[in-house]
Length: 427
Image (cartoon, rainbow, N blue to C red; front, side, top):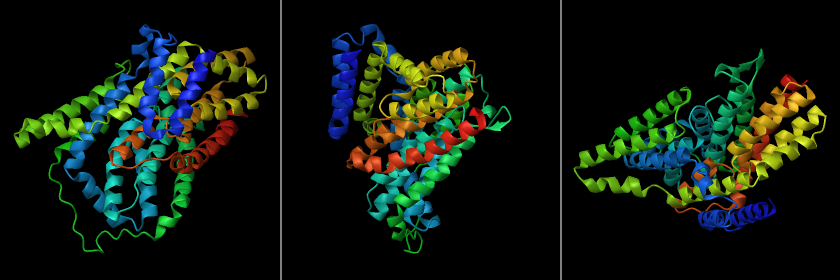
């Protein structure tokens, strides 16, 4: 395991230092894992999450058509009319993204909401970096709010045989939805404080005599709304193929491209949405999936899970605390899905050995692992996607830019959940 751990740590250090070259560093490290045998050839395909890749590619192409239709510009105009200043606009967009991501994949949410933020920033001639970061971390937060909000929630729901409503009310007590929403409120306050200097930047949409943007094509908007509806509906289908969400997004993109080509009577109209697919972001995710597959194969995640279990001893509160905060730190650097999948049976074994109710440990695991991705720019697919959008728009995201928002946001979200889960289910 030692070579795998060293290579993994070195990869993440290099990605944090050389942010412009993250895709190349990740893919290079993945190649070393494969060539060295730490990731066998038969494990390459299972390590790749094609659902996420297809969903990102499909939604990016669809969003390109959405932007071309000028709908994001119209939504930006409406927001600028309704809210008084930039500070409130950021908070409103973050909360809006959070609401959507409670029911739709976080990556898809970022791709849908980010164009509106970019349009607002373009109109006001301000830096969109903090806007997009806020939207990304808000999307990650709400993944634990419902059974369908994130893969980690689905894994936990399956382990505890939870229904959709159990995430709201479980065994006669408020459950994850309310813990997450309290975190969302506190996080919104954090964002408002972080953007307090932007309070003086007035939007004044109609006071400047500006007219609303005219939308040229409503088909992309219909397709995007259709994507949201289909993604929500698909989340309730049991035993569906793993790439269902990805197929929904790519199929809708293809439909949008075909309609666009027919309307313009030009096959070349298919090129702009295809060129909008950010292959740097996809390359980075491919590399990370393979790296995580490598350390999983080498037993690093299993060993880490067992180490956490032993650290708590027989003290249930200490064990709960370690699981929550270790999950926050670990998921800031590795994909939370294999980590949660590994920890669920570990927690079940601990509960059986100690003859305790595993519920607070499970909920603590979900809270820490889902929210910990907001600690770093590469801790969650939504963060990587948001940074990719900014890079494509010509903006570089420095680590300090992300940490300034991500770290306080994470603490504001995790702490209330940590306290309430223990008070309601641990005592």
